[in-house]
Length: 132
Image (cartoon, rainbow, N blue to C red; front, side, top):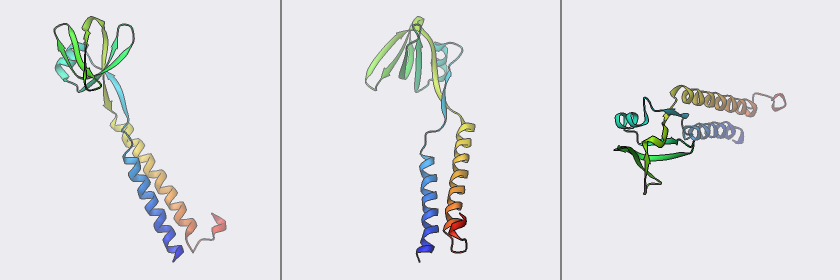
């Protein structure tokens, strides 16, 4: 009975690993909004942006909007920040890279399948354990 449980445990472990991999954050990167920070925010209405100021410091703004000559948004959910557009060098939005995400998931699935198969083969009564 014990030898029958080992492959079952291996498959359950493999499935658990695969499910955990699905919780990994998708592959994302920051992309500069064009043509200008103000035009990008006004046309795209992003939920969150990373602002690079003229002095090269960055700040992440939630719900940014352009009001007059300022970029206004919230930081930390409750503090409103207003930045002069003349001080904003660029705004960036986080975008998911579908190709990188699929590649990562595919590689993870291959690794899990190989490991699970090795465990199943090594724990099988047919194979000699000394050969694994």
